[in-house]
Amino acid sequence: MRGPRPLVALVGRPNVGKSTLFNRLVGRRAAIVVDVPGVTRDRNYRDFTWDGRELSAVDTGGFEPEGGVAAQGSEALVGLVQQQAQLAIDEASAVILVVDGREGPTAVDRALAELLRRSGKPLFVAANKVDSEKAKGEAPLAEFYELGFGEVHPVSAEHGRGVGELVDAVVEALGLRPVKADLEPEGTRQEEAGEGEGDADEDGTREIRLAIVGRPNVGKSTLVNALLQENRFVVSEVPGTTRDSIDSVLEVRGQRFVVTDTAGIRRKRSIAQRVEQFSVIRAMRAIDDADVVAVVLDAMEAGAEQDARLAGLVLEKGRAPVLVVNKWDLAAQEGATQAFYTRELKKRLPFASWAPLLFVSAREGIGVERILSEASRLAKQYRSRLPTHALNELLEAIQLEHPAPLARGRPVKLYYVAQVATAPPTFVLQCSRPEAITDSYRRFVENRLRETFHMRVPLRLVFRERKRRDRPPPRAKKGRGSA
Image 1 (cartoon, rainbow, N blue to C red):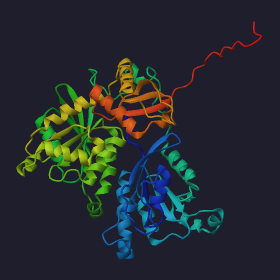
Image 2: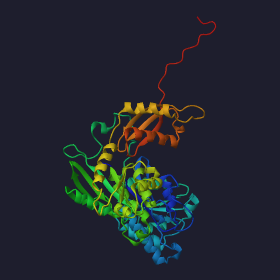
Image 3: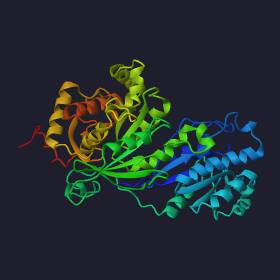
Image 4: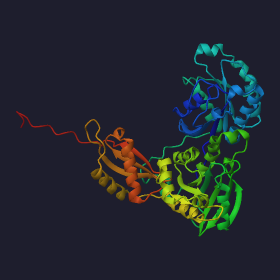
């Protein structure tokens, strides 16, 4: 069973360059970077791969109270940043304290260092804004050793200077091994020998891991309680991999489920009450371990920005989502209809329009049993392997129905398709010019796969150029004077 990616938390006082370093690590401008202390961001987490090692990063830079940093006294600022750091420490495998390398340690830096040392986790100091050798010579780097973290890493997040050495140190401390790309030809992977696709009971039935995620107060725990009351075959309750999460193991009609209630998503501290975005970091742990994820929506206010963020996170991690609209009894009393609600939700979550949608009332126990049956169906699709001959028959039909777009006036040919992985189903399509495949055509092919094989789980499509096979040399043309 897959485990969660190690989480690397970036903490520090405002305006030291945490978001810039975050963007450098994940290789994209996933954070808004403005030269203003305390700027808020839309996203604060991202998976990334470093030299074959899979990690996640979280930037705590966006968590500021109403009124901004300027409105805070020094004591309030110290307390605020400590709260941010504590939230990250709770979930992180390693912590990078980002400081301004051009200045000496401030009171906030020292307070944070004291807090971090008590965590017992691998700690690193990134002395940022050291943009050149001259700046390195002028920076008071020796003073940062007083923080008691061991080695100090001078970096320039803006220019990438020293960042590689910093992440190498993190990877070494965590003991991470490279992960092989899972795109080998069909018939060579362990799954085909019956290994590597998840845990199995003694009778050969694999358990299904179902995570329950959602915004605060949407009824997650009530939903889990309803599931357990409806199905009284509870085996045990054990601490989950996520802090404050509980794994409930139950068996229904011979199928074993591990249901994870992500209680850690709840607002636990005053700072978290103002910033619901941080809840996704706790949800990441449960999602990483799940096969199917029930994204719980509030029928009275579904389709909110946080709903979209959580659903997007589930798809980014390649897990099978089921959208569960809770409190439907209250919405129905207000005159809402499922048809109207479905149309509106697809507008707000267009990227997950194919995901199953269930309307339930956890409080009344209405429709709750459908979640487990849907999870069972999705888990089978998630682990399924489609026949190669049927895939290629579909590929031929697709090209006749809607050929790939021209590339510089020349046709793009799709030669062959094979499934190379499961969980989620992953397909490699050999073609003549993969760079010419547009996003719209990729979506068209994906939709045809869904329609043909009734797939309602994430699908991954990889377009690759077909390798040219050795061909015999061309025959010489007969000309004048030839025998």
